[in-house]
Every structure is written in C-alpha cells, then in structure tokens.
Image 1 (tube, rainbow, N blue to C red):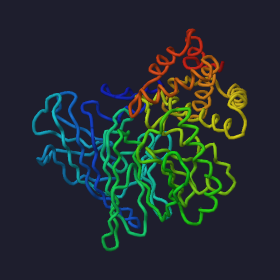
Image 2: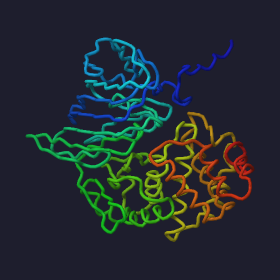
Image 3: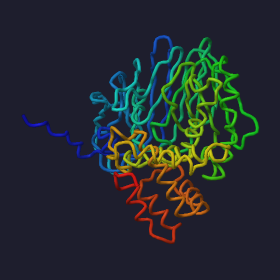
Image 4: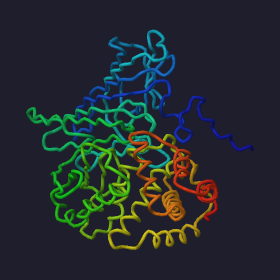
Length: 440
C-alpha cells in the first residue's frame, strides 16, 4: 500500500509551519478588545474591534478564531453583515461588496464561549484555566483561543484591552494600565499596548496577585505574584535589575515604554512564557533556590529578541531562541558564573552527541522548539562573536535591535547586516552553522 502523500499547504499560506494561520489580504493596525470574564464559570464574552486596511481586492475576510467561541454578530465599516461562518478555526466574513486595495476596514465581532487551549504540534497553547485564575500562553498560534485575529507573527498591531472580572482578582495584560474601575462586585481593567505587537505576544493573566515593584531599576520592573511566594521571589528574582542593566548595555535601549512585568502563578508551569513586556513563571520557578535564574535572563532577553524584533517566518525561530539562550550565557559570564566560552564548549560537546539532522534555519514545524535550535543558535552567535570580536559583535546586536525595532526580520536580514561588521566573508561560518545539519 502506498504511503499517503503529505498534505500540501493552501496556495495562499503565509507560513509553511502554520499554513492555516493568518491572512495576507489585509493589514491590521489596531485591536480593541472589550471583554467580560467569569472565572468560576470560565465564561468569556464581549467584542473585538479590528481596524485594518486592505492589501488586495477583497470579497471575503477571514480571521483566526477557535471553535470553542461562538460569534453572534459581525459588522463591517458600520454595517451589519449576516453572511459569516465559523469552521476549521476560521471566521469567514462575506462582504456585501468587493473592497478595493487600500480600503479602510473596520470589523466588529461580538462573541463568547468557554475558551480553552488549542491543540497543536507543541501541546496545548492559548487560553488556559489555572486552579484559581487564568493564563494565556499564545506562542505560536494560541491567540485565536480567546479573540478573533490575524494570527501570524509578521502581522503586528497596537492593542487596547478592557477586561471585566470579579473584583477579588487582579488582571494583568500588555502595555500601560490606563484605569481600574470597580463596579459593584466586578472591576474593569483597561490596558493600552501602543507598540506594534504580534498577536501571539498578547496575553491575559488573571489571579489573586499582589504587586511588588522592584527598586533601583533602569527600567520600571514590577511583579505580580501570590503573597505566599513573596519571600522566595525576593531571593530568586533579586538580580533582575542587574540583568536589565546588562542587556541594555549589550543590546541597546529596552524597547517598551510601559516597563517590564513578571507574573508568577500560584500553579507550577512546565516552562516560563514570554509576552510583550511580560514574562510568566510558575510557582516552581520561585522556590527560594535561585535555580531558575538562567530562565529569568532568557525571558527578559526575549523583550529584544522575539518580542520587539520578531521573525517574519516561524522557520527563523533561532533569531528568537538562539539569541535568548546566548543572553543566558552572557548573564552567567557577567554575574560570576561560567563564562560564555565555557558554556559554549559544554553545549557544543553535548550537541555533538545528539542527532545531527536539524537545519537551524529550517528545523521543521515539529522541531522548531527543540532544544537543539536554542543551543545551536547560541553557538552560532558565539562563533560569530569569535570572528567579529566582541566590540563589533555587540555593535551588530545594537544595530539589529534598533534597525528592526517593533518590526519583523528573517535570517537573511541578520546575515546581511553582520557582513557590514566583518572584513572577511562570513559565508563559511553561516554555511557551517546555519545551512548544514552536521555540528561543526
């Protein structure tokens, strides 16, 4: 019997790794979410207002939206639209008349339901209930689990998030907290994320949290955590101000106006999670032993590499994870631990014992979060630092974060920029580390 042929991606797929996500026919500039959430019932309801412009002629608009959510009403440019359907993770809206290229597009979607994580190659992603609260872990395609969106990292927009929930909970979302208004037993929290942000980096954290503001920091840092974890947090996360100072020195200015927030949930989490301006850790990462410090550095580094400068295609995920992994080594070097060179030698030896069948610049969807992507990416950067010298290497990183600030980039953008900092051809280095599977 013949093996079944691999299913071909749709002809209009934006990304081969998530071929059913996103829509290249329009560009969103702003999302406005006005939501009500009942924690005990896991019931979400409200509206999403999406401001966009068409990039081609459109008769139909699609948005990514999970099947667990039901759409009750849609309007486009102020007029109700009755021809819409939800299936296969897509909200399809049939426009009354074709819109030309460059037309303004304002879509209002009223919806509700009991949100749950999406099943994916990488496990459950998106909106997830905690023991007493909620977290959203959107990477790479979980945004559609709680709001209709053009869910692809290259589709960045500003966000206005208004969320009402029971007053005993604190709501943490991206950007600046504009207001907090109590209404009887419920409180409305309003946040504004002005910097262009990928949908997977928008998050919602709801819990019985207290706020702890760190002192003497070059950028405002606050933490939201259960009261019981405060003492361990004071020890485990104490060196974040020094991390922030180091990364500003090495990578350039912190990219977000609203500062940085760390959320520690009352539940354990398998891995920490990054969002725009926010990192989320589990109670297991805050145990008084300071054993998760490399992860704290890793998540902070993502604010530059991944959140501000975001991949245009998921195949280039090493531009996020390799850089954040290398930031761990740089922090170790500066804070009195093993040097970056010592860690590079250690992980190089370990990498050579693992299967050498992964192409760093195209690891495949299933393996894009494989630890080999993280470590091989960091090793490629260490090799580049060795060839350029530290001064040129860090000048390159600052140029990279400045040039692509709040934008998207691919591997060719980085290798092209790196060539400006080298007197010799970097082609042999890239061939060995980026475009071959064997570990050099």
